[in-house]
Length: 481
View 1 (tube, rainbow, N blue to C red):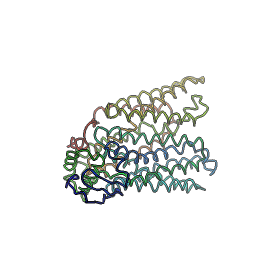
View 2: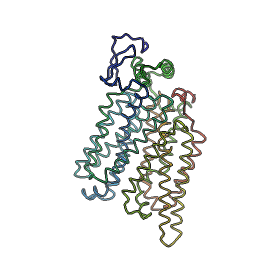
View 3: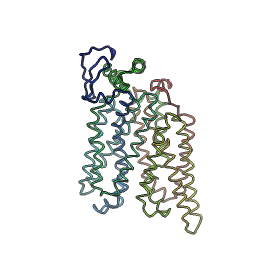
View 4: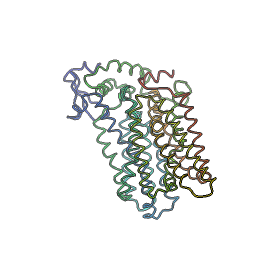
């Protein structure tokens, strides 16, 4: 039944949206006055993206929280350095658990339901940290936060990709990473003014706004189509594209894409041996693993040491400056990605990272060779680090998540997305845990390893990553057959 053909008086409950739709004659009511907000399709999609972007802001806040609070937490709770290191790393452990569950949760209860589930442990985790009297509450809170972040890191890019029109999908998809960097910057900024307990309470805000916000946005139309909810699927798509838009062509494309998929279809690991599945999965995993193998998280974790070697008196302020630079560079990516294309930006980004890491490596080698102290080597390291953050933010930071959400076929997206997200978090944990040991062994050698990985990323992208700009999700996924 067409969305436009239903009678004026007919009402249908819109499953998983918490809203009611009145069908016919281009009229709809979404929680009362919300219909006026989403009358235009682009405004509707933007509104949805801004709501779900609260999840990545929470993600970034969790990542940035430990940096400005380390000294206070260690002092107040009398922790050892190793105990605080465990506290910091537990978010990665929780995220790995969340990543394993994210795909299946998202498939069974929808993208919105997944975000609702992710928000709850985040809120509980922040409360546990804010009231912590010993390490047990700190550890429990950090683990819960990580679990929620693991679900968010998969679900938000997928939801944005599935609701966005093809000409806006790149820019809107990049909002995910922009929100993450904004969350990191906010943690750095607020950490300069409030103590660690208050900062933990402030960490609750994104998810407490996200939960009610989810009731005002529609579920992913592609998920609804996959689950066989035809009327709800068409209603959701009509809301997202605007009530004056003819959606019949897009409806038919999506229906053809999911025609062979039943909501009861069980996808097994053995099915991933087929090229239409293993090739996009390999690309998705490859990009997300290489993103972390570049050492970016290790660099961020030890950036204060590099700032101090450059002679900067306030490493916290300098770290905040680095966060601001990252937000600005990611904002540029959001603007460029639908104009320049994903592949070109990835090549430029990974090339810039290679040169930046090489500069830092050379600075450390020269520092070891020259016996006398010189601030010039610290300045070179600082320049290389800033260039690294800018280069990372221009592509490698945001685009792997975007491409992963675009290329995975809808019927394996839950399983394959969980695998790719788990690979990313596992690699992130490994880099964070080994960076300190590697830097102790040889700073120049460490950055040389990261340089080689970034150079390989240039080759990987050039040879295997497809350009997805200007193509529908159905066109992208059918190209792998």
